[in-house]
Length: 80
Image (cartoon, rainbow, N blue to C red; front, side):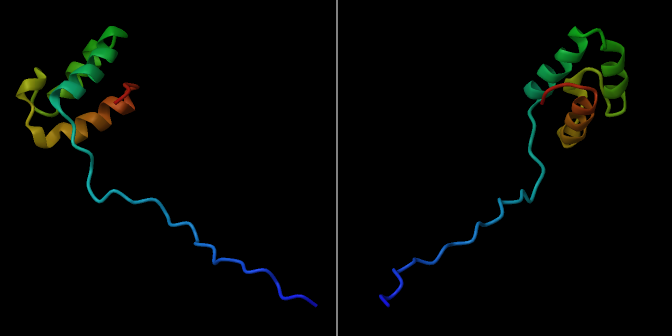
């Protein structure tokens, strides 16, 4: 009986890297996302949401709230 052909070891797949911090958003990214909702006739909702964070205007909102605003905009249907 001939010896079995050499089979190199198979590396097991490694899980994808898990982010350790939330993504950082810019005011421009938030403005584009908010504009999507305003253009869809939801300006009052956007204004009300921004008031929770010290706005409107968006420029008045502290940067540390950008992640939470992005989450809210996404929940409202914006693509961000």
